[in-house]
Image (cartoon, rainbow, N blue to C red):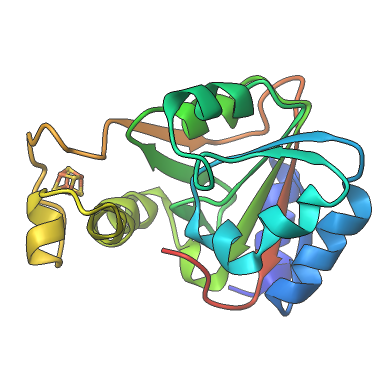
Length: 197
Ligand code: SF4
């Protein structure tokens, strides 16, 4: 599906949208519109690939547990006015699907900040909720488990989800954002490149 139609579908669900051809252009856009803000980041390889923390930190207070690990930093990020995240998958029909281990990202994208921005590489776009869920479980989670070095079956075998009951299981909370949460502004920033998992 063309970006123009995907944008229409998200806009019908209350989101604003932008499309950029490069991660650098998306990064410039965000550094232009976000200044003198308190910003929390969700865990994300996409944000890392954009160098967004370093770029935004120059004119904002940015909190990210990928830079300083720990629950205390996650809690601090979850008090921010602005939240920036990617997603494990989105649908062409206008929904966002995320899986979390601690729940910091799914909670903050549902309630808390004034505004939430999602950076979405083209590899995250799926046709519908069922494909999005499958992508989360069989693509994103195994790669994240490997990155984190946990000994789950998906990380060891590296091919798919085994619906494990490992104490290290990273799939603990799943959220589907079907419409912008009441009282929040949400923007989808599409980047026409492969980004993150
Ligand atoms: S449920 Fe377990 S095996 Fe499946 S993706 Fe999550 S951590 Fe991996």
